[in-house]
Image (cartoon, rainbow, N blue to C red; front, side, top):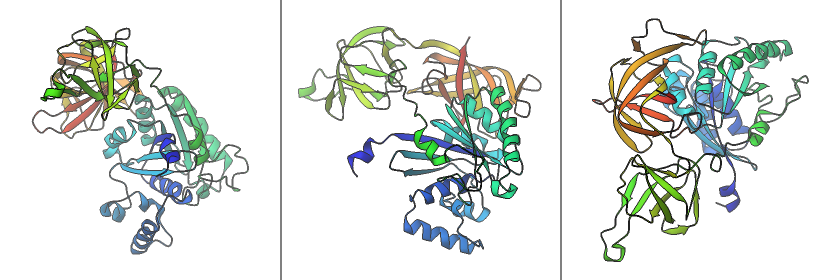
Length: 424
């Protein structure tokens, strides 16, 4: 693999939409037209299309990888696909459209730089459009593409496109979405996906792929303050490393440099970085996304779950926080429910102190009626109390230190995900 490829910028994006809006077909079209499909993959999809009685190659099968999905013609899990153009690398998360799998969108979109929400031009905006738009806003995805698909089935009508665009502008305003872009496309035929279509002379924007190649990728490493959740304390029991004490972890935000004054939370002890190491190599600095080992000038009592931060930019510290939670499990969440809480590298116990309100997706308004429980795929505000203080930032400031996972203490299942938006 050449160095140029390794140095290329990476864009993570997710697709969402209602059932049969064409998400998988769109991704298949992007893969096929960008020549990112191997011959054996195309051959397998061609055979599968013939077996299912399709008159032509069904590009959706490039992402519907499970045989059960192919036979049903649906996506039932998050499918990740990778491709590249001469300008950029991409990771796509294709998420299911069924309401039962809304929780899967949260998983697929949690690290995305952009979201593509598909709308069937014949049906316009539906409930799942509202649901996915709200989740996109909740997750803080910075760029939102509204792909008005199946334009070929409405004769590439500019009036249909404009009507949907105007209605969605209102939804974007209600949900707080900022950077919203619109594309009239036919994923099946390729119109405006990789190349501009002659069928839409009234559309003057770029193709979808041209946009994805140029949309800014969020680079927060030098904007957000440094955050290093400690995952492992390294103490080699060897004579040559008698005094070695390193603190290893994956940098959640910012930049750390040798000589920086840092504070260890929750103890509040301050020290100075003397060494930064990565795979045995000495570094002078390290940034967000890198896995490193830090050594400090003082011997401090640090353990897994602690966090190393700049002395001048501490995290918030509290054992009671407010969250917007997406519930994943058939067993409802109840006020007073106890769970294992995973936050960065720490694991502790927590109790849901109260359910504050639930979102009514149809109206995009808060409701406090009949919210004794939160059911699967519901989105709600809860107050969580933990057995020890959380070292956190608000989710809008840092998606890693501002997010929480709920684990069932008896089954060890992941049952919910929360985004911290305010502390008590």
